[in-house]
Image (cartoon, rainbow, N blue to C red; front, side):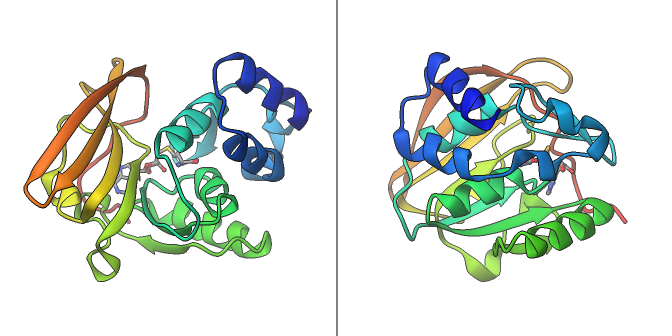
Length: 206
Ligand code: SAH
């Protein structure tokens, strides 16, 4: 079923073999509630508890491909959620720093990732603040929709780095933006199309 999903992603335009191979190694069925297990290799988003969702595989593949990753890069992920995207980034050979604002989700996902021997640094906190202790990052991936580009996060991006973030109004489609720091003081913005994400909310939740 996983191989079939990979072929589906290929037919939808994902062409980076490293991304497809990484996704072929991650057991997505273990990142979903067991009641959704039989749907886990469909190209769909699903609820993961606490009102959140595991992103659609195509979206994970698209964001991962557009990040243009190299091995050993330091990546910041905002919105750990199920941990699936973090696992894919680790399979790409990167070091991953991921932040989640919902305590229950944070605890469950931390345990799951440990059990599967995925080793990102994960932190419970407000992703608008990034992870200053580990900054700067080669890449930043935001997996929840912001109303505008969070400048605090951009400040944690290295020169030559890219940030991918869906930006737009809550409950509607957002635009996937690629923000590249080409020089210390220059950010170049590119629109990569329409997507739909759960909102990026302020402050952590207990
Ligand atoms: N990358 C996840 C997608 C999860 S959905 C996966 O692969 O499953 C988005 C996640 O972003 C949710 O878990 C939500 O709680 C989290 N989130 C929303 N606002 C946030 C913020 N300000 N800081 C950290 N996480 C946030």
